[in-house]
Length: 98
Image 1 (cartoon, one colour):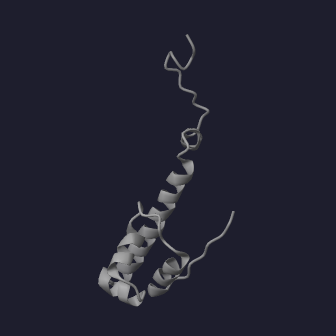
Image 2 (cartoon, one colour):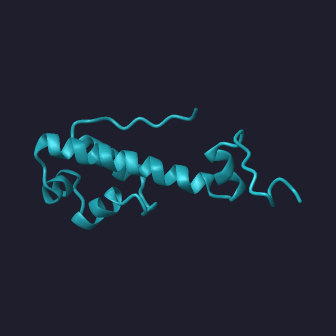
Image 3 (cartoon, helix red, strand yellow):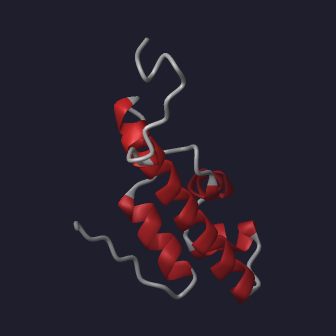
């Protein structure tokens, strides 16, 4: 019987290794990044005392587009939308390749 069949757990494998093996790492990282951005925007909106409607107006956008931006499961966000959202709360958008 193999180690895997006996329920052996390889403790040297990371969660990222597991996700990558299942082909889920890229999607999981994208969702996590989108959640971080959404959380930062919500916090900035709260600090500014902005409702979603007021935020959308500042972005010169619709409330529906803001809802998509704040939804971590919706990947369809453009850089222009992110820049508008950042500017609406007095922030700058910084994107870098590492």
